[in-house]
Amino acid sequence: MTYRSVSPRLLFGLAGASALAGSLVLGSTLATAESAQSEFNATQTDAIGQIVREYLLENPEVMIEVFDRLEVQQAAVEKQAAQAAIVANADGLFNDDYSYVYGNPEGDVTIVEFFDYKCGYCKRAVKDILEAVDQDGNVRLVYKEFPILSEQSELAARAAMAAISQNKYMELHIALMATSGDLDEDRILRVADDAGLDTDRLRQDMKDPGIEAAIERNHQMAREIGIDGTPAFIIGNRLVPGAVGKDRLLEVVAEERASSS
Image (cartoon, rainbow, N blue to C red):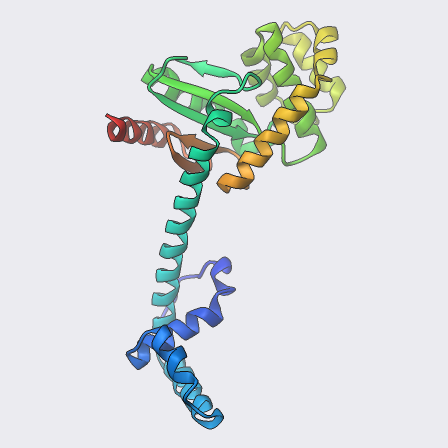
């Protein structure tokens, strides 16, 4: 028999899964099993454990079923937690002077993107995101700098956020996303110069303490929502992790629009 791989995250729940499987085998709930256990002596408890062990060894597919159930339950819990955190952080997510807004400012659906300028997946996703927003025409896109990969990531994030005051955010954002290799300060300023920014002003604006505070807020919101990688999108009240592509972005936008109508 060929078995599919099991998520390593779920392997940590092996003990709990075994108990659950055992209760299924014995035809009772965990609560009943725990209640009954207090009435068993050590020998009886060991015997029951041996019966469960032998059953699982002879029928390992039961564990696959248990892991599937655990994975579904965990995903549901994580989804509910993410949605609650999105609602709790709505103002910071959707309305922040340090977050650039692209697309239709009055759009009926908002996409929030958490990204890192050193993230290869984010770089590849740029075209899909912009095409999705432009094609729909009624989407508001909020950019959230989320530098998690390196110190250069944070330098680039500071520069992009500082570019807002020159009304040159998109020019620098696209240029930085198209830049491979190092993004040290000298490289960033050269890219900014090529993109038409005043680099002396940019260098000064990058020191704005409000930018540092905004980046920290982004990190805090990401932790609460459960974002641990880039890119990650919030569409309406839904977390959509990963570079999912233009079609999927438009699909989720349509679903959110329908659910709110």
